[in-house]
Length: 212
Image 1 (spheres, rainbow, N blue to C red):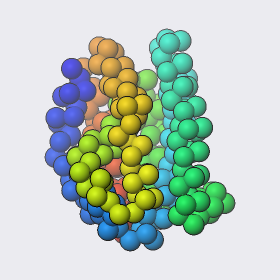
Image 2: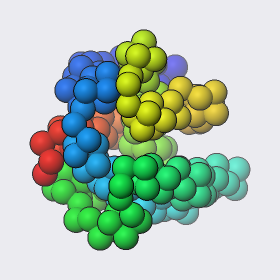
Image 3: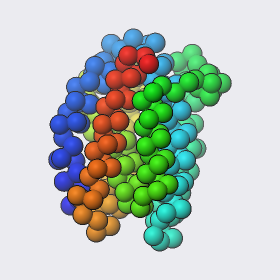
Image 4: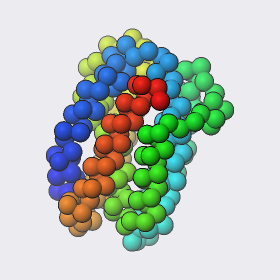
């Protein structure tokens, strides 16, 4: 399967993500709250642009069915996930106005510019290969750190992370993987996009940890 190969090739990058201090500390409950607040503000901005990228992908879909899939993902992100983020912001002592007014950091701008560019100029499956690491890596992070999460003393961190362990979220990841696997696209053609997005995922965690 194409996605199995992509995941195997990206494993050195993903292993760095799994052991990144932000990831480890947020799942253990030892991450300073100011770092998590900064992450929430940045990630909210990311989700806004991620939705735009999915909408662009829909316009490049080779079939009506695939167009519907991309639009459903965009709708789910802008309604479900962003609504969840609004609740998380409130619990963290932040407002939607704070999130909308937050300046995206350099990595955030670079990552979003990359996704928007791919989804505007490349093919549908290349776009989906670039979007998949975000969905998939969060699911694997949650699985890797499940035991730590069970002992996590911070309710906000537990609530945030538990979303990525739900059957619904993991079914979404599997749906995206199946979409790419059924495309017939050789993994070599998808790899540059999957790799670059994986690198950006790692850099996003680092920028959140450093606060800039």
